[in-house]
Length: 125
Image 1 (cartoon, rainbow, N blue to C red):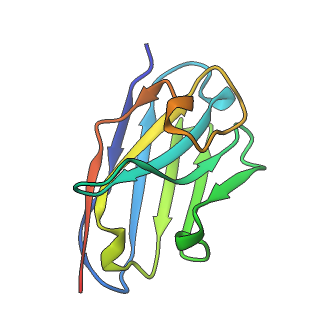
Image 2: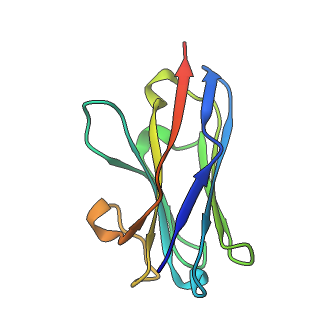
């Protein structure tokens, strides 16, 4: 069984920064592709960013390019999301997801088989 635990969410003013962490249990974390998704009230869950098992390949939603950075530390079984220059439209519950059957990421939430509980990010204007 794989468990994902997110942390680091909170309330921040526009222009501020937050760093989300996702600790993953599992002996083969280094082989998992990982993704960060978000869901705002009344909206569908959407991809924010994703990373391959090695970290060599990443994807970013257009609206977060240049502001968000995904990274992973395979020795610590942790994936991070550094969010800078936050905007009110970034407000959502952020979820970390693991794709344990593939080392390549997917941009479709159906491509991930384990999910964290989510952490709230609120950006005030």
